[in-house]
Length: 144
Image 1 (cartoon, rainbow, N blue to C red):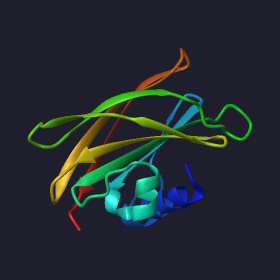
Image 2: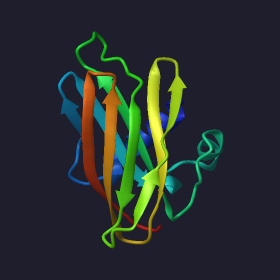
Image 3: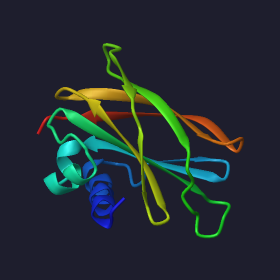
């Protein structure tokens, strides 16, 4: 992930998600970092570079997994699969794409939403025999 995309997602996490300093789940030696936000937070150039549909009705899920047992907590390549569902139980299969830049490894998936809609995420995260967990979280999206 480019430094510009990373900085944009980090600033969105810090300024757009009230009452949450960090979205992370620690599972054993692995820190699973995640964020879900509107794709309109991305600049048109960044969205184009990564093939992301930039729309008022498209959300973006970003996940990175770090091995905290190793010095420097390097990113690890994981297998992800998951679904997003709204309160009416409409389900969307998440199609994660891996992005690698240098030592960084990130996974992104797009999810459709409507105004003022809560989306519940359930994502299976696997790393060989060392990590096999389900990440669950909820994000409220607004049409800007």
